[in-house]
Structures are given as C-alpha cells and as structure tokens.
Image (tube, rainbow, N blue to C red; front, side, top):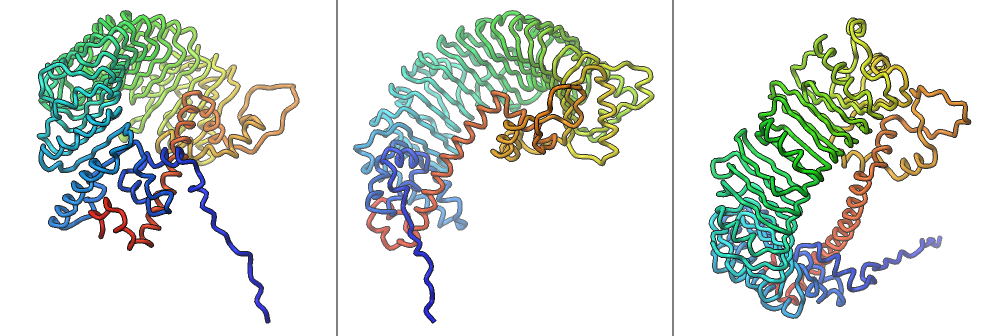
Length: 561
C-alpha cells in the first residue's frame, strides 16, 4: 500500500530579508558578545556585527558561571583579551554612539584607562561605566569629551578638582560615586547644557551645591551612612522643573530651593521636614503642579497653600504619631492618601475630581468604634469630589457597625461615583455587608459603585496581565454597566458584555492617559525584546550546531570552549 506523503514544510528566513538598518538597530540592543555570535547565521550576517553603533561589555555575563577560582581567572583574562581585540580592530571604521562597560573586577587602572581612550577617538555620545569595586578613579580625559551627551558613572571615584569640559552633555547620572563637594562643583561648571542630573547614594557629598542655568530635572538620593548623608543641599537652578529628594535614615537635611521658582513637580521621600519650612516653601513655587510627600518625618501641623497645585500625594508612615494638615488649593483636581491612621485633614479644593484613599495592611489593627468614627470624619472631607476610590487590605475596615451608624451621619451624601478594592475576595455574606455599608456611606446620589478584589503585584503588571485586547475591544463595543448601578434611566439599554467588576476597573484604568502611555511604552519595549530574543536564540542554536566554524572568526577565539 502506497503511503500518502503530507505537504512538504518549507522554512523561510524572514529575518534575513529585513533591511540592514533594521537588523543593525535590533543588534544594538544585544550585548556585544551575543551580537558577534549572530555572524554564524549566514554570509550576510558575517560582518553585520561590526556595523553596530553600540558596544556593550559585561564581564559577569561570562564569568559568573565559573565555579572554580582558577577557571574564573582564566575566563577573566579571556574577557580582557576579547575587549582589547574589539576596541583595536573590528570597529575601526564604524561610528560608535554608545559604550557600556560593566566590570566586576577591572584588574588594574592602566587597562581600564586604555579602554576608556576609545571614546576619546570615536567621539562617543553616550558612556555608561560601572565598576564593582572601590578604588578606581575616572581618568581626567573622560571629563573632556566634547561630543558626550549622556554620562552614567557607577561605583567610581571623581577626585579631580579642576573644571570639566563637557559642552554637549545633557544627562549626568552619578551612582555610588566617591567625590567631595568641590569635585561636584567643578564637574557641573563645565556642563552648560546639562538638563538631567541624578546623584544617588554617593559618598562624601555632605554639603553639595548644585548650580546650573540649564538644569531641568534633579534627582538626589542619600543613604543613612555617615559619609552618605547630606547635611545641606543648596540648589540654584532657575529653570528646574522637577526635583526629587529621597533620604535614608531619620536625619535632618536642610534643603534650599529658593532659587528654583520654576519647579512644577516636587517629590520628597523619607525627608525630615519642619512645618515652617514646608509652609514657607510651597507659596514660593508659583508654578507647582504636583506635590508628593512620602513617609516624611517632623511634620505635625502641615499647611499647604498654592494656587496652581493640581496633584497632591500624601503617604504617611505608621510610626508618625500625629499630624494635622490644612490644604488650601483651589485648583487641586487629584488627592491621594496612603496611611495606617486617619489624621485630621481639611481641604479647600472646590475643583477636586478624584480622591484616592489607601489603607495598607497592618497585623495589629483594631477595628473598633474609634476607628470607624475616625473613618467617617476622614471620608467627609471628600464629599465635594466627583469620585472617591478606596483601597483597603481588609474589607472589615469599611463595614460600618450599626451602633456607629446610629451616632454618626453619612460622610458622603453628595458623592456620585465610588470605587472600592479590597486585598482578597470574600464570601457572599461579606460582599453583601460591604455593599450595604458603602450605600450608607454614600446614600443619596451614588450612580456607580464597582467593588472588586484588589489585584496583587505591581499595578503595571496587573494591567498588562488582565487587560487583554479582547477585553478592551469588548468594553469599547459594549460599555459596562455595573450590577449595582443606582441610577434609574428610561433610555433604551444597550447590550452588555459579560464583564465582571474587576475587569471593569482595569479597563477604566486603561482610559487614564498616564497608564495608556505606560502601556504603549511597555508594548514597544516588548516588541523590541521579542526581536532581540529571537535573533539571540537563532544565533545560539546555529552556534551550537556549527561550533567547528568558530575558528573562522578571530575575535571569538578567546571564547572557545
């Protein structure tokens, strides 16, 4: 009997059909070693890696799997030789825009200095240098690269007390850097176009002074150690739009922002503040639109007054004893509060649209009459807002007992939209009690009341995991009307898609512009990541199959098994 043959399967190499510019762009996201391995794919790919404008070297990627000390030393020497050959020959005629060097053990300074002369020859625009090991001081000529636009330094020392010359530099990132106050002054002196500055967990900056006419964004983070905590930070940047200060430990730091009247976004994390300092600062920032205070200490009677403030986020540490806040912001549209306690807060914000209230988990929380009375007083502050979103770890925190209802009035009689999320789902009885309590909290004009278990994990991951294309498309086609809708309408009802309330919350979150931008950016990153992973996987498979061809590429000889 003749056997019937199935259709012949034909494999088509579509990646190789892409234009050279696209392939080179994708290869630029790969570490240099992996980009070199793609030269085994075909003749067309053989020299493609030499056209990639990005060099990315990291010794830990090739040394970390070696368990024996002698083997690690041998592979480290091979890595040094690999970098030497890449920088000496293959890229001689290629325009290099970015160099990334991540070293776990840089060996000796002369070798590192020799590698860092490569940016001097190629007029590199972005330099990312990370050294895991104290002692290496950045060479003087690096601070005179006139074409450099982005400089990222991590784990190095900057000890030169002379003006730098970085006329094109726009972004400067200093992470765990050893430098004195005067060294920072000289470094910034030679950066007339600097727009973004990050100084994170550096050593020796006890009284730093940041002076720049072009600076727009400043991120300054200090640790709790003796040499990592700044006593005074003086900022003179008349064009500064965004300032973030994060402090480790409960030590006081004097922050001077008098010369920064253009600030629009101000974030203070873990800072030790005084009521008078904050009360004097906020009115001096006439363009301030966003204020975020997270776990700040020292505040007792906080007063916030600003005409242009639109977004205010207040997160209170559970160790804070007492706090009274008076907020007078006529243009405030969004207020967020996160804390274990409900402090006395008064808000004058006639244009308030959204109020977000978060009660985190606390193992020894006692939900008694005092708690519920404080909750009712706290919620009554937001009666004038259009929407109130409450996130509570325990749903019991929102179920008002009958004895409390008898002595208190409903806190949100004028509210139209309310959204509630709890950490975990509950049985039918618990859901009924929770909904009944919420209807008492906002009894009159409530139109929507979605209730859902609070998703676990990072919010962006939750949105990407739950908000599938079919869910979003279905929602756009058939708008969701919650089962607990309290608004009677005589209009003809449109067909509803069977979405539960949690899906409704997630889809509504997608309508927010900030979340939408985040998802679009994440989707673009995922697309690039898929392309990179695919090319990397093909390269590894073919490299394993054609292992005997490795001798044809001279630069890979140092990495033969």
